[in-house]
Image (tube, rainbow, N blue to C red; front, side, top):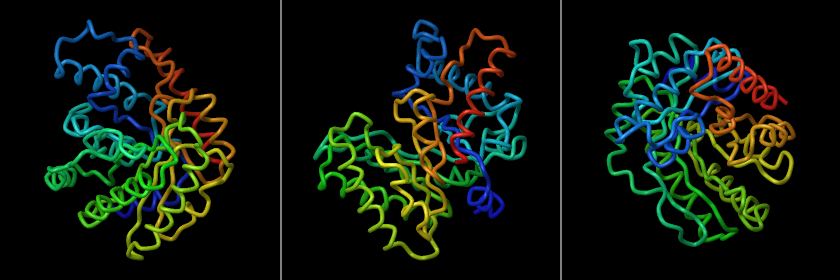
Length: 295
């Protein structure tokens, strides 16, 4: 583990940029960016286009360590280059931004009100490649759609089981049990989730440090006990489908919670914008998210 990166993630101001749209969400991300499905004929062309979009964001003069702590990458992005450097090396050596890798393989079918992560049979091999590509940490997502205690317990149990594998491989995992913003009784689901998170955090080896990525909660400062837990390096919030304005407004009410936005970060960016227009929009987006993250 790179201890310079570790200290940056622990102490510095800023937020995490999520640039990790996977195969299922890539068409929507491209469409929002102004590239329709008629522009590509296969998956390879699709991923090349989304890499060009991500590269444009990463290369922007406003995408810097002054406001951005880290960036989450999709596996294919990790294996592709920006200006002749692998993406993680470009982020760290050119921008001072910590590289993180999405490692999950998508969601299983809904059961007990939740979607667990699909099996990850090649996780060990992926972690070996991630070390070769100088990745600092990982991210994996589950989804909670109901205030179902059985389902939420299963989500958190699975997240921490996989998290320990990642910790033992020398990475800091981001544990992401997302609560769908449309969940009935969302506040009740969050109460169950916090209880389970604290239970599993308390059972961790004192030397283990994890990060958590959580949906913006209904109650202000609801996760402070989690944020201040000795086994927690950082807690970040996902935008979860909220607009950037709404996500920022909600985030600003939660002290010590920082953003890890994807759709809210890229909102307003378009392939047809001039570089000046693109960079101006990205600068506005980054500044607004940064402001909400330092309350």
